[in-house]
Length: 415
Image (cartoon, rainbow, N blue to C red; front, side):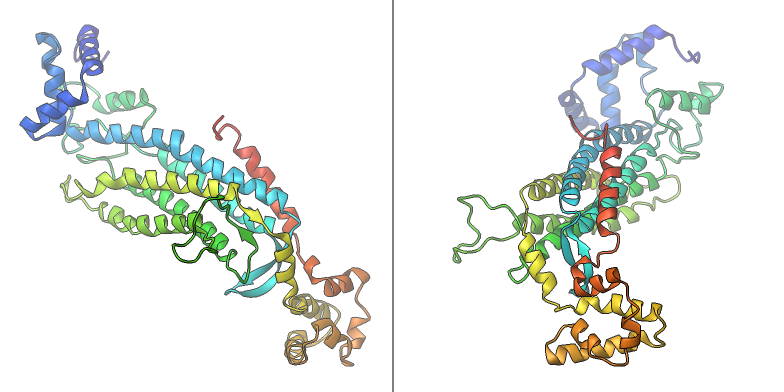
């Protein structure tokens, strides 16, 4: 269509490309020591003489390689990584919905803080994983291709076509790709960097979720339990052991993969119009995609069999003996005019700890606070008496996030 050759020649080359085998190219590469030239030679051997000169004419190796990589990584993200991650998110959604009202003590710095709900805690991961899913899809769509020659300036193609950039756009458009505004011998490496980051940051969220679930399985916490097969063994010497091995495995995968981002950042540097210092290191990008997929699948399976112990959740919440009422007490005292409510409640918490009494009991006996306490509404007093109900909007947020992402996953989840 652009006057370089006629359609019969193009069809002959396309037909030959469909017929050749990977083994033929590998055999030829053992002779040429060049992968793309080996591919060219094998195709040339299977086309008529009048077509041979047009095979690879005007192109350079990385017009082929970078464009092919953009296609295969995009397909891997769309068909493998994203659907697997969507299944994991769907598992989190189910738990968030089922446990939206299940009170849990929130923890900051490993210490009891304020109540949330277990569903709210899971909704956080629904949102974070969903955001990473969108970032994966976006980074895959942004991968560019190229057909601009050995230094990116269309030197050879300008001898063959009147508008080489229009030809590049047309060629890449047929593959649903786009050209970079400017390339060298390779496409700008930031596309690969962004794709790797989307994977590794998704793995980081998975590792965080896995680590939280592992921590909640500690013997002294016991709020969740990983499924355990009837014949499964947890230790070679301790018959009673039931370890959170799947959650630990996911965190371990993240530890192995996260440092590879440094290599990906280093691959941004390619001297002048291109060097070969990324020739080995960039080949491992596929492993990052594979690890992300495996971790998502394993974590989804672990959550599917995980048991939530509501009685332990309730017992752990009660351990604080009402100390978690400190914030609502402080806020309400300030609301009704106390000039230094925070300090007053801080002192009360120390007194309650010394006397092993509840915070509300100590506050009620404090004469200085009585003028403010009598102003509390019945609902406000109920929060102090039942601090497990001091959950803010946790149940509503859990349901809202779960519902929104259940809708957004339509068309993404595998059938």
